[in-house]
Image (spheres, rainbow, N blue to C red):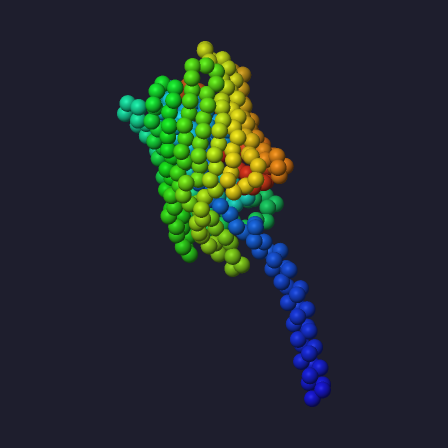
Length: 323
């Protein structure tokens, strides 16, 4: 009997040792933070030029397709007859989004601009992730954005951006709504001003569980208030310098986010851009770089965010056709 008890105790201790060695291994494979993510439906609605300039262009009338960054901007555009195609690709998650922005419909002081987009997994034949070991979520998303702006005068406009997103996979599906409010003031001169309140509604999120399946969900969106300005020089003849600056307060976080962007046009057909997002309290510094080729009615834009931090590891290309 004593020998049997010793064997049972030995087996129990062996099992405890095995479990203690296996549990940390599972924790390393399935890191909770790496397997969770948010589908950033708002920032992925930004045009390529705005992204390259640090998403700080909430008061910039020069880009003409910045409905995502501030819905009030189309109310003061000089030329709103354009189509824009863009492709966004995140290197960490291998998610690709295709978007189409339609021409603005103008009826007196009322302006309506729509954007349609589709997001899904990237192609497995090409290793987009490089050395990253982060798992890829299994999601598909359809999104419609509608921006309505009201020009109260030649220099002042207000607007609202409404986004409806439908996300699904084999396990579940969700439908969410989110809205932003904005205004822009552009007096006759070098400087224009803008303000945006973001995050009214819910956002989409996902988690990759231990079986490798992707579970979907939604949560209250992070609300924020952003104030900024844009400087153009010169305002006559050909503008060759544009600087945008903004401060954003995210109400669930301490401190402020500082955004800045610059665009230089050394010649009329070439635009060189750079931008930065910074959060000084947490020593966060996120650079972006971009380029644009302007060929009268056609413009090709490209942006790259090379910093693997907070989902800021992506690139995007845009094609704008303006009439």
